[in-house]
Image (cartoon, rainbow, N blue to C red):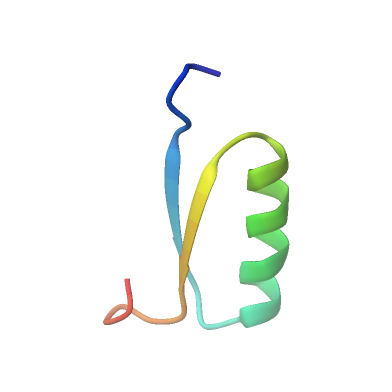
Length: 41
């Protein structure tokens, strides 16, 4: 990856999914932001 990690926003109302996908993406070097609904995103 580059010097600046890619930032990713994941929005889903399934908290278990959010935590799993966050872990996977962070292990790959991404900076991950999560939201549980559109307003939060």
